[in-house]
Image (cartoon, rainbow, N blue to C red; front, side, top):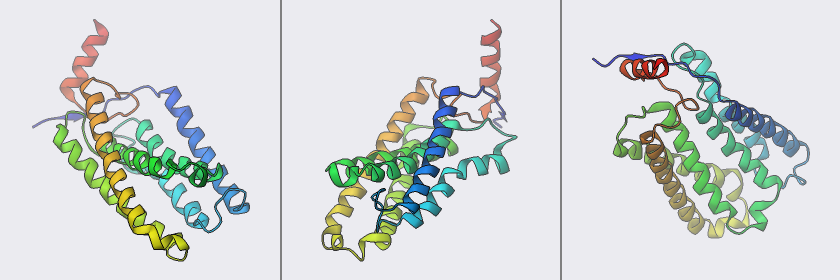
Length: 221
C-alpha cells in the first residue's frame, strides 16, 4: 500500500503577500460597493449578494485547512490565492467600470475565473502524479458546474428583471463555452507544471514517503 507523509514547506513570501493583499482589497472594495453602489458601478448588480458570497469563498480554504488539513499539509497558498483573486477581480472590474467600457472584458472574466477556480480545486484535491485525463476530467467537472451555477445565479440576481434578458440566451451560451475552455486551459497548464516539478512549495500536498526521502537525500548531498 502506498504510504503518504506530511511534507512541510517554507511559506512563499510573494504568494503570501499577494494572497493577503487580495483578501484585504476584496473586503475594502465590497464595503465601498455597499456604501457607494453608484460610484462602484454596482447598482442593480447584486452587491449585497456578492458582499456575502465572496468573503465566504475567499476564506473557505483557510477555514478548511484550519479545521481539517493543518496537521496534514502546509497551507495551500496558491489554491487559496486563486479562489480569492476570482472574487477580487470581479469586484475590481466593476469598480473600474470595465464590464461596460471594454467589450471583451466580460468574456475574459468568464474564461479566466472559471479556469482559476478549476485550478484551485485541482490543486486541493489531486496529486501531482495524476494523469492528464484525470486532471482534465476534474477540471471539466468543476469548470462546467461552476459556469452553470454562475449563469443561474447571475440570471436570478440581476438579469431576470432587466432588459438584458431578451438577449441573455446567446450571451449565456458564450459564457459557458468560455468557462469550459478556461477549465481545459487550467488542466493543461497544471499538468505541464507538475510534470516539470513546479508548484511544490506554493501548492503543497501530502507526499509519497519515497518522494520525501529522495528530496531529503538530495538536500544532504
